[in-house]
Each structure stands twice: as structure tokens, then as C-alpha cells.
Image (cartoon, rainbow, N blue to C red; front, side, top):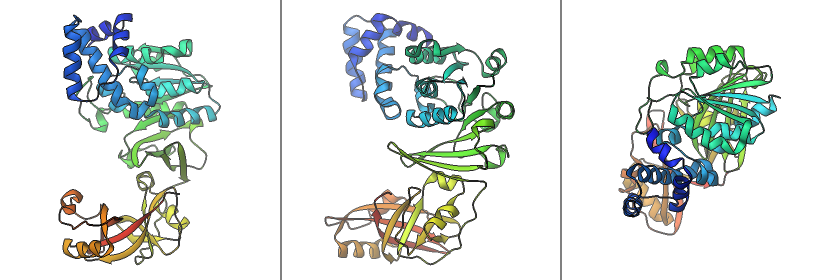
Length: 402
């Protein structure tokens, strides 16, 4: 979105038109809306802005729920924004540390800042991009003076408005090229603001730094808490917490969020794995946040389980236990990892619905499925994994989540 389009939209008539159009979900919807609005005499800039925002609002529902219906976005800003449920937990941590204000230095469209203000924190939100800062100001306007938005670089804002003893800093360094639409990822050396600057800030004031979950672990500050977060099965971020926001004795954490429930595993360091053992009655797949945090061993010990292979993140046990930190499966049988043998077993069990999971094997599950015979009203999970120097096919039943 260009500033001219934003100005056309940010008028009473423009916003009223946006609300009247409602969500637009498909390319066909876009074409119909553009034709209708142009025929009604609206300017090309306003039509482009309204239709673009209507489509972004539809996409944003997954991250912001009903709040998306009154928010504005850029495509890049929406892609990079924190899910509201995750941002709410960031806010809870800041409040729980007894802090009352936060400087959101690189606020984007204001996703985290919305959660901060909603939790009762005073917020200074800044963004170096003029259009993005204007959109953040619109999204935060309902909170009045408790949320101040500025068009500024993170560095200038930090120097101009020092963080006091009751304040914290939230940093979400830009990990993609500048722009409002198509962007590309950049290396950690090119983040904005730079990681060196962000880590220096974190050494001086309580800070949360949002990074990609695959960030180089060796490049993290040794005295900070590293928390990997998954939401509904996807690892969405790594947050580095410092100062009063880092919990004493915690250096590794895995926060697993499913729907409205959350569970967390913490440790003072990477956890040693349990020894490899033969496949037992149950197989467990650790959550991605647990794997990233290297806390698989902690989960294994809670399940009386061992590693299926020292290089593969599957656990196995004979104990009828499960955990919020794993997906658990009851093993039916082990099969040769070829379509003919697997199809024979599927037919024998009357399995017509099959979930396929894989780890450590070069298999395209969609292509592999086409080679199988699926017939019947039963369902199961097929787990393809490398164990030692062999490929194994494990037919199993999913156990409901704990």
C-alpha cells in the first residue's frame, strides 16, 4: 500500500466503504468488487485500497480473530505480525515481572502493541516505515493516550525516550527486505535494527527480542532465556528474554499453545537425550518447540521413554502415558517400508483414511499416498522413519492430546 492509497482510505467515506464491502476471500471476489466499486464512481486509488484491505482482513482472522474486522494491514506487516494469542502471553510476562510500560521498537502493524495495551501497559510503539507507522496508529487508536505511536527508527526512539525502571523493551527486528508487499528474507547480519544493537539493549534493560525459530543457537546471549513458542502445532517464534523478564534458573523453554490452553517446559540448559531403545507399544512425536529448545530428554523421562534413533526426534515407550509436549501413537505393527506391504496391511485392517508422517526419510507423503490402497471406514497413522540404517514403516493409532 502506498501513502496516497492510505490517505484515500483514512477518511470517513473510505472507512465506511471498507466496512460495507466486507471480507474478500478469493480472486473472483476481488474482480467483482473492483468492477462494482469502479462502476459506482470511486477513484482507482480508493478502490485499490479498499479491496486490498478487505482481502487482508479476511486473511488476518487467523491471527487476530474478530479484531481483524476493524484493523488495517499491509501484506508484509500481516505476514510478520505476531498472533494475538501469542502476543497476549508476551504481555502477561511483562506484567508478571511488575513492569508497567513497554517500548515496542519496530511495532509493525501493531500486533504485539495491541496485546500490551490490552493488558494495561503503557506503550510507545515506533516503526521506521511511514505507512506501517500510520497503520499501527490507526490500529491502536481505540486505546487513546495509553498507546503512543511514532514514525522513527528503533535506535532514535530508544535514545530519545529512555526506558525507566518500570519499563521494558520489545524488539521484533525486521528479518525481511523493506516493503509492504512482496519481500524476501535477509541474513541475520542484515536485520534491522541489528542484532548487535538489540543484544546490547537487552544487556541494559529488561527486553524481549522476537526472532525466527531457526535462529542460530550459538549466536544467542549466554545469560538470557531462550523461549521457543509453538501455536497449534507450528513453531512460530523464538523469544530471547533478558533482565527482569528472564526467569531465574531458566535458559531453555518450550511454550506449547493449543487453542486457548498453554503448557511450558523449562530447564537451566539443553537436556541430555535418553538412550536409544527398541520400538515399544507407543511412539511419541515431540512438539517442534521442544525439539528446538533441545528438551526432548526432559519429555522422554516424563514418559519413561527412550529415543527411537539418536538422530531422529521420535520417542518410544511401553508405558501408557502421554503429554501436552508430544503427539502420541499406539503402535499396531511394523511393516516393510514399501507400498505393496503397506497396502496389504491397510486392506486387512479396512483402513480408508490415512495420515502419513515422516522423519529422516526422503519421501513425499502426497506421492507415496497415491501408491497405497485405501479402502474401508477405519483410520490410522503411517509413520515413516529411519531407524539406524533402515527405513521403517510403523502403522499406529493417534492417541487424543493430553
